[in-house]
Length: 171
Image (spheres, one colour):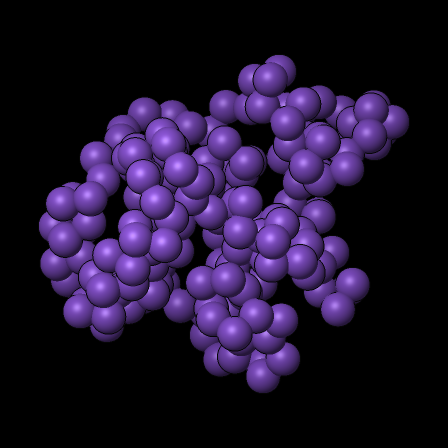
């Protein structure tokens, strides 16, 4: 089965309470007949990380052997490279200020306008992995200095994406 097309947006917003905010997102997804998945941009290695998580989640979901009970949580599990829902949830939204990749799968007419009532879409390049983010990602994904030395600093993102793919092996 073909992988779904997804629109991926960058957005910023403030969350007072996760459940209430997610219920609003779920209502928009239901109204627009799509799935909306929110990824914490500060815990991801850019758009390729989002795409890899979505690709693996879709394969798992359509293959009949998902880990989670929703495609949204399945995608967060892959983004986190973990089978633990509590770990995966930390890769979604959190109370306070959020910088988020929003995946809309499949793309849906009017969804961006509906989301604009809750979020501010952001332009700009979120792909850079500076020293602070590199340390955070290394800690989150268990990437050692030795691994980075072997592949080189320029391929750090590949090490994160490898952790996403390894979740299939650990099933």
